[in-house]
Image (cartoon, rainbow over all chains, first blue to last red; front, side, top):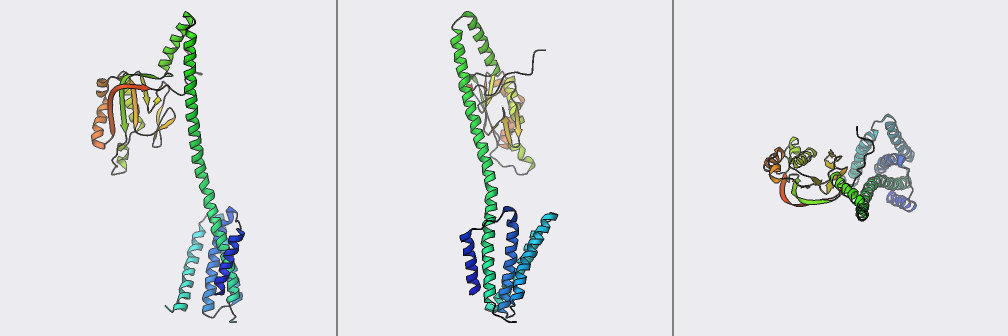
Length: 108
Length: 233
């Protein structure tokens, strides 16, 4: 319950403050968001599996986002579309995490 | 190490929510930033186009004033009248006065049918070369003054294609193409190679092609006619 409240509060703050991201950086922010989404779902999953460790969670949350940003940046430098690679990998992980959470909750 | 996860997770979720909304908003900004450039360009083109139309109109009015001033002047003396007659004759030949008279109105149009293969597509459309051939045939049939879609043809008029658009006097035209030719003989034009070809193509491809003999009017040429570089050799 508390995580959902946190999500709502964060979104509300962003809507109220309307922070602006420079055009060039918006790709990186988007990647960081996908990475953070993956880490958060992993955290929810591990908390349901009772293996949650806040140190691991915080480190994975931050490092996931940083690695995603670094990969996109590297891809830009090499003019290789690494965005696709990051999105595909994180997308798969998000699906796996969601599937695990679903199994925990409804036992399907 | 099994601590209560809720607080840390909630904080992470708050951060996620914040970043999510921010990223979504900035992605929207990026799209909006790309969009106006396109509509700005379209606006610019339309503004310039209407400016050109306005100036064409102004030029037309001014030319009319010049002509009437000249007429007034010509009433003064015999000499002036001769000069005015010569000017009028020259203007008629150069195409800077609107003319009317018996002639042919030829209408050309793209086919309403769709080509079945990519290679055929050209056969179902009117091309710049078609217009060139039709105009040439009209001149050969005795035309003295010709206009396409109210754009007067003069000695320096190009009929060209820019992509899929036919450009006459540097102004893009859109179908149907109405060619008015004063003085063109109906029979001579109907006997021409291109008219016969078009009669055939009308059946084969559904191209629009009609020739009518009637009183036609052609407008004055709106562009510049002055000669600056050339001189008699």
